[in-house]
Image 1 (cartoon, rainbow, N blue to C red):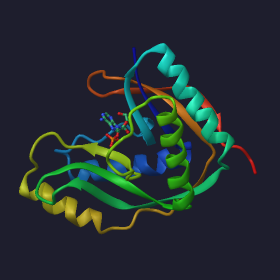
Image 2: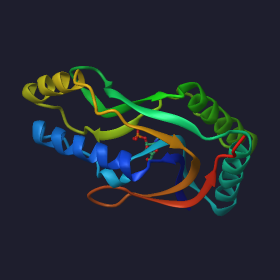
Image 3: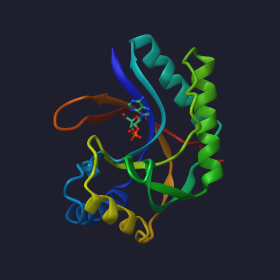
Amino acid sequence: MTRTFLALELPDAVKNTLRRQIERLGRAIPEIHWVNPDSLHLTLAFLGEIDDAQLMAASESAAATVRANAPFTLRLDGLGTFGSAQAPRVVWVGLAGDKARLMQVQATVADELAARGFPREQRPFAPHLTLARIKRPLSDAALTTLARVQREPLPKMTWQADAISVMKSELLRPSARYTALSHWPLCLP
Ligand code: 2AM
């Protein structure tokens, strides 16, 4: 069985920009455990533990999606959180740019997976790059700093999303390891 998800991987320039932000955020709020910048990615669909036949079907879903979708532009947007202001669960960076194309690619992925028997995600797609997962309540000082840094703009960074990756997730300590099993380049129009 393989813990699997489909994602858009990020160019090194984007990871390096976010690495500097994570270093800055880590100095500002050390009690949060920030992710390893090398593992940053944009998840399109999370499949959980699947067998080899399902892994093949997941790859076919990626292949069918890229045949119907061209590369598109993404930009970093601001910082945000999931959860309440008092109890944030995730700190993320939002995406801007060709958002409609991103939503279309994710919708195609979802349809292709459903056509191959994968259950549909019930929650609406909220595209984000996870910078931190917060497991324990934060101090008031950390909450105040988090609210402040969320209002600060991130450096401008634009890139071309040009492939879907089938990703393996291994739940290791201290953090999960993500490995691309296959890449599916989005088709040029
Ligand atoms: P997250 O970044 O918001 O945690 C690998 O775990 C990727 O799949 C992560 O990007 C994670 O999103 C995403 N994902 C979506 N649903 C998930 C779930 N139920 N369990 C674990 N990861 C999930």
